[in-house]
Amino acid sequence: MREIEAFLAVAEELHFGRAAQRLHLSTSRVSHLIRALERRAGAPLFARTSRRVHLTTAGEGLLAEVRPAYERLSTALRQARESPRRCTRSLIVEITPVGAEAHDEAEQRYRMRDVNDPHRPELYFSHAQWDTFVHSATAR
Image (cartoon, rainbow, N blue to C red; front, side):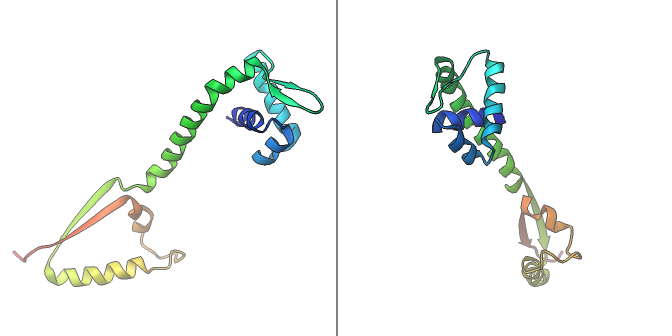
């Protein structure tokens, strides 16, 4: 993945130094990643001179295929990271009208709790993945 990121950065910047800055890597590390990718591709991807860098025909072909694939992969990875934060389950709690007042007070205290408190309930860790529905019920 790092080789592809380096390739895309150099292809967009057409400059190893700027690509290195963008990736927060050294210029030599970017050069190493590009050389490794060129070995895997079996062809030079960039034509380099002391003053200029440009894509070769092989580099242009690779860029045309890799850029959209990398964007799709980046989107998929971002969605995978975000998916645990989405609600995936529901918890339905049925309580009596008298219990509803106690629930409201408890929920308010829960939402205002100190997240650094080591004695907070374990519910804190999974609460973000649950929708809670509280229904008032009549006593039977």
